[in-house]
Amino acid sequence: MAKANGYYYIIDLGYDPMICVAKNDTAFMNYFIDNIDEFKDLFTSMYLTESEFQHRFPKIYGRSKKYSAYDDWDYCKEKFCRELRDMSFKEFVDELEGKCNDGNDTPYVCITRRKQSEVMYI
Image (cartoon, rainbow, N blue to C red; front, side):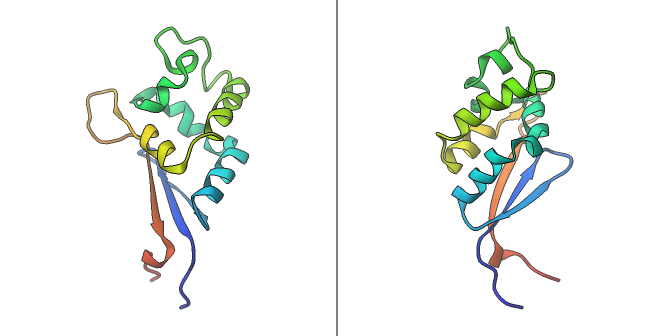
């Protein structure tokens, strides 16, 4: 089997992992932003975590939130996209990962990058 180029990006929300393939981090971020509707579950489940990413959006995730990522998706996704365009992949992943707000130390949202050459094809 020929060696693959690029990376697998595994987005794990604790229940149904999503796997994306992209040639690099920039391509992944561009896809993520351009197709943000596919990742709505990620943003709606952020209410269950304590992460740095939430601090960027106090009107959505703060205690006195004004908008809901679930009910006001069109407004929220515009705000998310605006912020994401200015973030690197590493910054996004580092801010996104946070522990569950139920006291569990395991990150609820996790994005992992693996080289395609590290994947075993069986």
